[in-house]
Image (cartoon, rainbow, N blue to C red; front, side, top):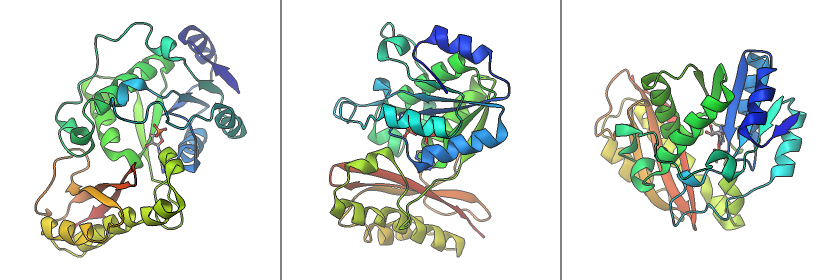
Length: 278
Ligand code: AMP
């Protein structure tokens, strides 16, 4: 596996890779969720490129940019073992040689849920992903459904800005008790870790009621919120996957997403579960 750190070297190596090229952007501290994206790309593409970059643009001033877990040596070992062809690990100066003036506006998809809680987050995500897509020029790029609002924004960006890449969405990988894998789970104390699965349990409860034909979303959310403590509830909601506007009543025969966020101590957990209404 080749590891490159600047754009010139990346473009030179990329030009030699057999196509189609599959690309997985990450912030590192890799876990089985990331590796499932790599495996999917490996099975569908002639070459696989992974990027590892903790993007300062997507962290708010009071967020965890400084202490975000960074495990570059272990990450490279894991990626080499997965037969990744090329890993791009740019420095901050390589990604942002000057302070950026132009960025990507995620529009209405940024108004609710994560977008409302983390102002500027999705602008930072969309901007860095667009830059990486331009640098790597993959035929396909792989994203996790774990970050469903991010996925909707990336799909919207690629469609609306005519980016020539196919976005592939991949299922969320979970621990046995249902907790979605996340690099931030490393922050959890043993007590927080054992409470953390309550978020996915609460989301599953709402999804089951939607599947059973219940329509009063406020009632479902009120009930599920009571299941969360000792987690501190942030939000629960039900959305159409490509819109991310909170619904009050579940429409029939619809593919919906139940989304949620909660705090385990200081660690923010987010998750979502699909539900089809009858
Ligand atoms: P991150 O390193 O957190 O920026 O994540 C990089 C990619 O991995 C994103 O597309 C995430 O949605 C995806 N990802 C993170 N956690 C999981 C998971 N548990 N299952 C599947 N994909 C995931």
